[in-house]
Length: 233
Image 1: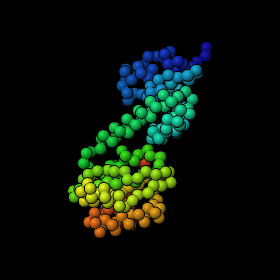
Image 2: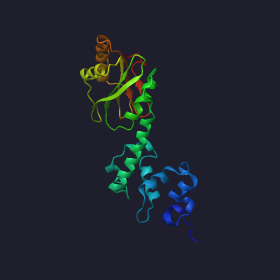
Image 3: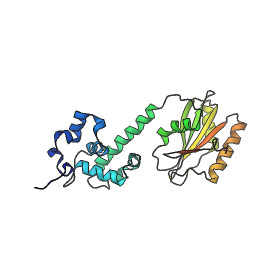
Image 4: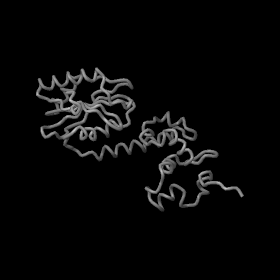
């Protein structure tokens, strides 16, 4: 008698406690694997592949990394077997809701006392970006966040920040200080000469305008470099 694992059966033929939707109802959402949760979003399979099989193929394609999965576009997801545009849109939408939940958890006016505080504030805005963006955190006299603002958005290789626009924004929001940040999608935290030159220009202008630049963070998804911590301001 042949023996087959349940993952090769049609989902309707699985034991009730093993079907992802029923399993969620019976055992709770935490009992489901990443593949099972993704399978629920996919909804249905194709010939010889269940929704769970397709989910496993997608997860294998990103090395099991949900952060990498969140970076995939609709077109990139649609390249996987069994994933059309509609299913790809469902997956992208679900992951975006998860990202926005992180955003909602950020305190309304967090106080920044270290470079790590600034990094945590920026995470909801700068996580999972595949291109460079330049952001500024505006602070009041108590070092509480007034506003986080994207100044510019560029390509994979870089973005341009205009000091005049940054200080105009700071003055309009009655900021007392600021923290600069831009991301490196490559994951490399080493500053370029252009990064150093811009930071120096901003720090000097901040002194003249009594608007100190407290730090410049090079942001990556896993870590960061702080100009202040490294004594580079």
